[in-house]
Amino acid sequence: EPEVTQTPSHQVTQMGQEVILRCVPISNHLYFYWYRQILGQKVEFLVSFYNNEISEKSEIFDDQFSVERPDGSNFTLKIRSTKLEDSAMYFCASRQGGSTEAFFGQGTRLTVV
Amino acid sequence: GQNIDQPTEMTATEGAIVQINCTYQTSGFNGLFWYQQHAGEAPTFLSYNVLDGLEEKGRFSSFLSRSKGYSYLLLKELQMKDSASYLCAVNDYKLSFGAGTTVTVRA
Picture 1 (cartoon, chains in turn purple, orange):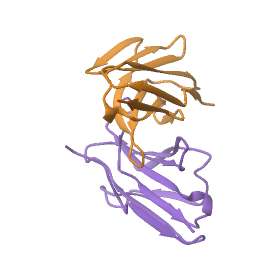
Picture 2 (tube, one colour; picture 1 turned 90 degrees about the horizontal axis):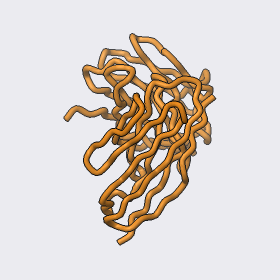
Picture 3 (cartoon, one colour; picture 1 turned 30 degrees about the horizontal axis):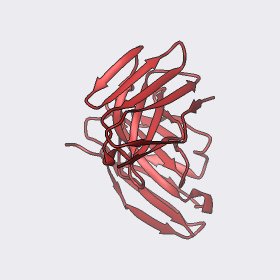
Picture 4 (tube, chains in turn brown, orange; picture 1 turned 180 degrees about the horizontal axis):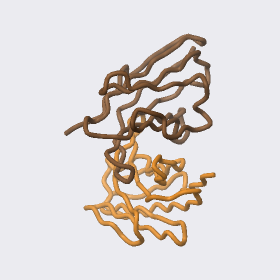
């Protein structure tokens, strides 16, 4: 069964460092998303990406964040200068169309120290 | 803005039925999803309602009333493995999640 894959599963980084979280969405999907979940809190939308551009972003997705689909298969989330409060589980998701279910990757646990 | 409410916790006995309610007030609506999430894992899809009424899928059913801004997820014949968090999510071409309902199934 096709699945969304994310790497790494766990990343520890020092405050102020840049991190890149990687995702390979399901191959025939058109819509890509990043969500985050701070421990014990709800899943929050960060950004959606369609047709090689950002279609929507939340207030959380400030100038420190960027996304890229560099090669037609990978979908990356970059945090330019990490803060302690960026520590969370980051989920990548993809879907075929806007009204179909989103499939989530297993997540990357980011710990900023 | 998005306001999605669901109870924080529910406890039920193995073999029983549990109903998890979700009420929503959102700026856009293109259907409502229910996801299951075990601790430390990704959400996994359970059901989707875009029209009013009941959708049945094995032991799980979901109901939607768009006029009332209300949905529920019904879990029947509860098993220990159903202990998890259940997330209500409104679709507006992105998902807006409720805080989740932690269901604990006891023997």
